[in-house]
Image 1 (tube, helix red, strand yellow):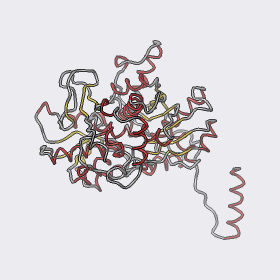
Image 2: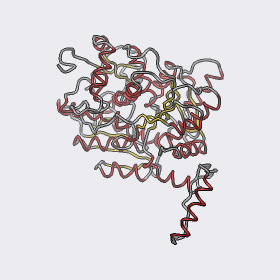
Image 3: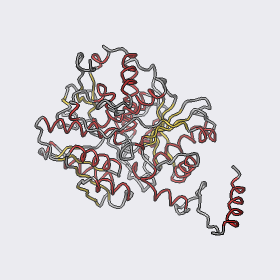
Image 4: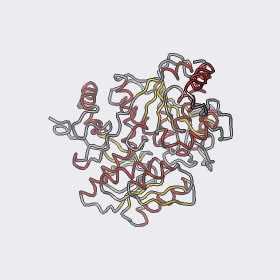
Length: 462
């Protein structure tokens, strides 16, 4: 008998701040009607507890990357924990999740940490972790439309990856998509993805925070229902897909928990989602304690880091009162160039719940860390470079020990950021490229070429 037939599961929206009320996942609602705070998806954990932790592990293992629809997806293999109230016919999946947990043996040896792993979320369909959340959101919209909801289109503001994911899943579902992008602030590879998938692509003369203001007005139900559904991370359906990163990491370690998980932080939806996944596993008995989370910000877009430092200087835990929005400056890690993150309340709670910390990385640090990791077989995006730079800082300080098991969440594929890679190796980013690798011109004569190639190998010394 299929799970869910004999024991039905349900979930609903609830206010993060604790206001009373349950709101259906099929309702077009983004904020608490009482306090205007963020919502989160809450599951009927009493129903989930009727199945033992060992039984859930067995079910998840039996489904993992198999072909039975829709459970071959790394997200929908955990359907009861994610979005239990969607029919299989309305699931929109592009085989997201199930990404490699890469043992970074050579890179870890250089840093003095032998148990270092990279969760390569960028190997997903559109090249970023955003697919994990978008499959849940677009599937829910497809179900809502099938049930008669008058949703004309789905819209997002984006620094690149969100728009790519939304456009792909919208195209697969046959749902119109609108994406709002900050002009001249995303890569060509990111821009071409929603264009190719047929989205209505709008370039706005503002930054990401400005795009967010426009899309929030566009989808504001208090000013009249426009029939356009919001797909940004303040819509907590996205979080439900992204939290499966946590479940997958533990599952790939045979249900053991790492000591540390490092996550790049911009709009802060991902660190919030990952914490939610670990805390739900703890409450339902699959793990006994969560790992410590590290939210890693670029120095040019670091409002959470500044809040964390204010709290640390006062010798207490971080609160929302520590936060002040900043005007994010241009950064190589363009997808996290965000000065007023929407998911701030969830992220603060996530870090407090997991004993987490916040660090920042300079432009030189993130670029050099990314290039150093690439020299060991990775191909990292600049946002992952931020997390790697923070990892190196924590190891240098002795905060992360040689025997600790560490996971770095890699959020996007390096091929989406070839301009960043080329600029680094061509030494035109404005700082010293410590690991630059410049192509070498040699003769076309075979005998002379052999001599030159051996000379180059001798110079390498590896």
